[in-house]
Figure 1 (cartoon, one colour):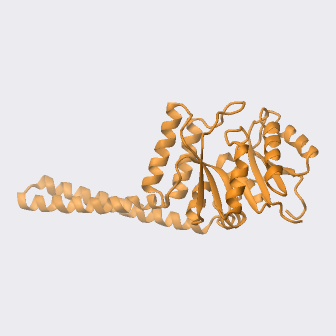
Figure 2 (cartoon, one colour; figure 1 turned 120 degrees about the vertical axis):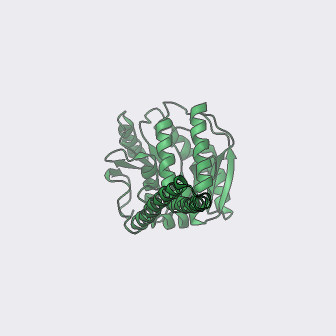
Figure 3 (cartoon, rainbow, N blue to C red; figure 1 turned 180 degrees about the vertical axis):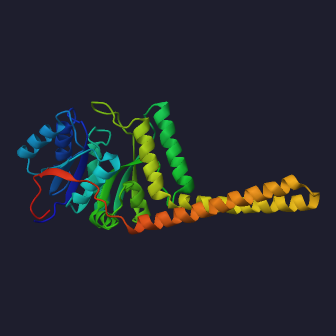
Length: 306
């Protein structure tokens, strides 16, 4: 079968209050801006009736497809897996709660047709509480300082990705894919679209402080591999401090300084070997990726060629 011009991937987890409305809104926008489209709802083991609603939507509209995960795989693996299953010439990833406005789809498509390979929506400001805002800002600050590549502040992953981008990232086989970081790492040019993110249309957010902190740590681990070499850098500073303490001990004739130099040298040696082990772990991880992002329980409305 020929590819649709656009795929819209919407991850769901307990979104019974939003799922029908988001599909209807996205469908209206897609019909207005592209010749053909598909909508993929990937459900992360909802328990509130979302799955039943999705199945009914699929029966009503053959352009809507569903993937039901056999368990909750978290907010990194499931959305990325859904994007990898999309067949469109361009793929949009967005949330089900209307915090990613469907009205922006037309602007994304226009920029893509003008040549942009990646289009990312970028929040102008935070609407969350003080604690959540602080966690987000801290995460961005740490990634900016130690990350292997820059991460766009205020970009949540809501955006459009060209087929070439999706096919490239799919080959990486990341076990915990920090997708919006991978997009930057891939080097494809990015067009940014500033927007004011609205509140949820209905229901409660699933992104509490704990989940955001977990997401940030996974992103840090995936996009800041240089951290594994931090003990090596610290060991060099330790050796330098030990050398200075030894020189001071010899000049001053102080036994305590010589003991301090010995302790610092031993500590630096431990850090050196920890750093070398960490780098070996990094290399092993790079070479042995192969865990599936998601195990499907069922899928609906996918063509045989998918």
